[in-house]
Amino acid sequence: MPAHCESAPARPPSDLVDFETGAAFLGKSGHPISSSTLRRLARAKQLTIWRRGRRHLVSLSDLLVAHGEWSTAQLATS
View (cartoon, rainbow, N blue to C red):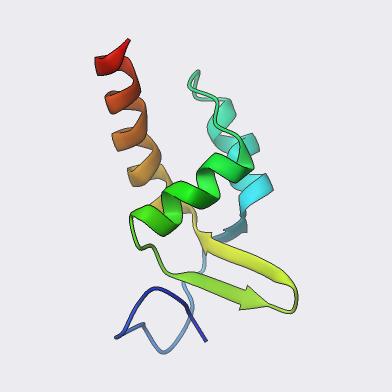
């Protein structure tokens, strides 16, 4: 069952990735982010987090949007 969402979709999205994979993918953007920071960001943005066994998965599309907002905020404060 998904976390952080009261009315979660009945089916998980097709672009689910774990936080390590998401961090590796987003690191190629020129704005690297660790998997632990990505996990905190997902919770702060209340993204839906799906469980598959012991793995926690999140939509890559949602991560891209959240990472873009995070990167912009990081650049504004530096």
